[in-house]
Every structure is written in structure tokens, then in C-alpha cells.
Image (cartoon, rainbow, N blue to C red):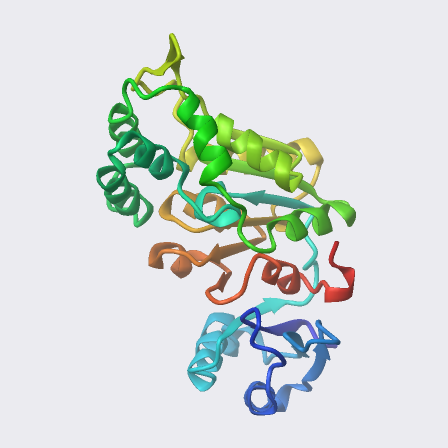
Length: 303
């Protein structure tokens, strides 16, 4: 009986996965009883190939994935090799900045304050894992001292937008019984807005202290970062009475590594190298609906 699956997902707008790519993927697992099934039956942008791998001592999913990636080099395809069983997860736990939305909120707030370049450089280094998240956050918030609180609303209205597929990802998983949590190292006002727009059940984020209508430049304790995201995953697993295997976690930076490695399916979304190296799957070309295909959802089931 087949117990693993190769998932191929075309970049949006690229059309049907062509015959050469399909043949290349099938030939890689030809001895293992492969069966091709379309996940997008009309547009042909996603498919899966179920197969029966050799004994565990001779089968390494990441190695197979890399062989497929090399064989299909030049194709705008996301490729994952995953266990076939238990693919549809009961908990979605997601990073916000540069994952569910296309921006880093603190960078956009800094741009309003005229210190955008300085803050963005610190953000980029922190997301690559080069800086301690806690200290990097304190340094960036300090640069916002005295900025009017109303700048938060201006950023929400004028600068923040969800990434393609975000609403569909959340709504589809919820329609099939999953719980959804947005966990951010950013700030509560932004997370509350994004959760309302996309439909997340709950949020976790940092407070952004203000006094007399101005940002204080201080960071409120506790500062919720990498460890807090992993702790949120553990808390929700217990609350929902599920196993870690039932969790899907998605993020883009070093701050997400602990929750990604603890989830049953950890996905690196257009991510930094550090996170791609530890995730179970990575999305480099597709939008957030690709995460539904990884779980075996057909496009006809999208909400």
C-alpha cells in the first residue's frame, strides 16, 4: 500500500505542470508503484504522486526531494516528499510578518517615522538568525520613540496587505475542522487586524506601549519571540487534545525555527536559508494555497 507522496505545485499563473515534469517525477520513483493524481483537476497547477518507498534504511525523503529538485531544475515548481497518512492537520499555527502578510510591520512603522532603512537592516539580520531577536526588537522599538500612536493606523490602512492565498488557507482549514492561531513576534494592533481580515481564531503578539498618544520606545515584557511561538504550539496541542503530528506550522525566518521543527508539518514559506534547512517542506514559488496542496486538499475543496 502506498504510504508516501510527492507533491508538485506550479507557481501561480504558470498553468498546467507539463508532461516532461510529470514524466521526470514519475521516473524517479518508477520502481515503487507510483500513482499520479491531480490536485487541481481543471488548471493542472498541482498534483501528487503516491508511491511505496523501499525499507526505511534505504529511503530518505529529503534526499529524494533534492534529486527531484535537481532533475526539474528550471521549472517554477515547489516540490515536497511527505508521508501520505495524517496529512490534513488539525491546527494551523502561523507567523504573521512576511508570511501571512507581505510586510514586516515594524519596518513599515519605521518608514512612517523616517528611520525605515535603519530598522529594516536590523530586521533582516534578525530574520536570518544573525541577531538575538529580543535585543533586535528592543533596538528597533527604541528608534520609534515619540512617533504618534496614530501612525499604527496609517500603516494598517496604507501599508499592510495579506499575501495571496492567506484567506483561502485559513478558511479552508477551518471549514474542515482545524483551529487557527496567528503567532507573531510583532505587535498586537497589527495581529488583531490581520486576524480579523483572514479569520484566525486567536493571536499572540507583543504589546507596543504608548503614553499620551506617543510610542514610548520601550518594549513591554514579556517579549514574545522564538521560544514563545514554540510554547504557543505546545499550549494549543494540550488545549485541543491533539498530537504534535496534527500541527501545521508556517513561517519565514529564524524566529520560527522552533515551532517549525516541533510541528507535524513545518513549512518554510519564501523563507530564509536557516528555516528552509529545518522545515519538512518549503514553498519558494507558490502562494499560501500551496500549503493546502501539501495536505492533499484538492482545489475544488478550497473555500
